[in-house]
Length: 283
Image (cartoon, rainbow, N blue to C red):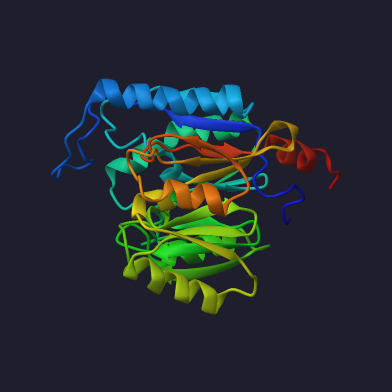
């Protein structure tokens, strides 16, 4: 069933705490230097904005040290309407992150579907939410080292009311590292050569028109658009310290109220009013 609410309307936000193992990578590999206390403060800024300025009901899932990348919560679920698809991250260890998220989504009365490990069906499929861009009209799925074509096919089978197009991730490691929605019809995208290649493919595949806001730095393209209370639109964007050359551009190009946060922290956004409406419709 297609979305009956304006794009960007949400009632709940789900986040996950920063684990003590923050900075390490699932299944080993070279991690990155971190400041745990700073990371926790930054997460506090985001959660405070979601709750106090945007008026969302905030659900915080506790951190688990054994899951060092679990703070990337958007990777493990894709939600549209009353349906949540639990994804299948590339790394086996990251698939354990889904259990707590699955429990929360079920408690919110969403229809929760799974990408399982069985033969046939979604066998061999990988899909991470940070490679999925929903525009309100259609899905773009980035084909990257984290997400493959079979994963995109499973998503298309799940959300049949919307067109699903696959695009190459030519710049950055994930699609949302180079583009995001800046409004109902606005795509914010990096001006890097790789991102331009991805954009050209998107424009060739879509039947819809989008305004394009190009920003000089990759990190500046990673934003979250939310229709807040009192019909005020908000754009959560990276801080000026992270992308000093892009903030003036994004503020000039989007007619929304800007809120800054560290681009690294992720959230799952849900419109439960839509879910409640569907559950009240008689069969």
